[in-house]
Figure 1 (cartoon, rainbow, N blue to C red):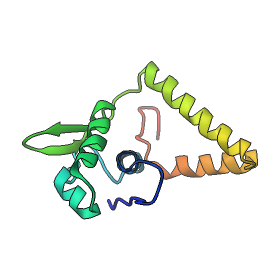
Figure 2 (figure 1 turned 120 degrees about the vertical axis):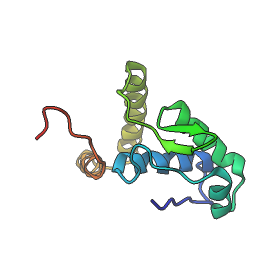
Figure 3 (figure 1 turned 60 degrees about the horizontal axis):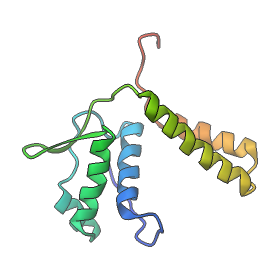
Figure 4 (figure 1 turned 180 degrees about the horizontal axis):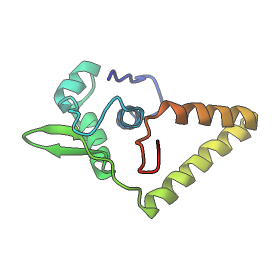
Length: 131
């Protein structure tokens, strides 16, 4: 997986890193057990402070998306069932993003099409009832 960061963006770099890794997991490019680069190596690749990478990894660990271990480093964690608190939080964030798009004049059908396209780009694990 190739990560890209926008060094000129107003979005903090640790948030961008967290977002790109989360997207990689959702897209199936990073699967359970996939190793992530060492913090110092990733920081050197982007020319950023390693504490920035540490902060992104700490967020991912808190969210249960990666495991951190001194011996194995950072690896993608097994998918866990979403808890009710997480469900409420992501729903609220999605509502705000959708509201912003509508408030900025993006037609509802374009918003829906974009949502469907993005959702289709993510790897969704098969459930017991799926073919």
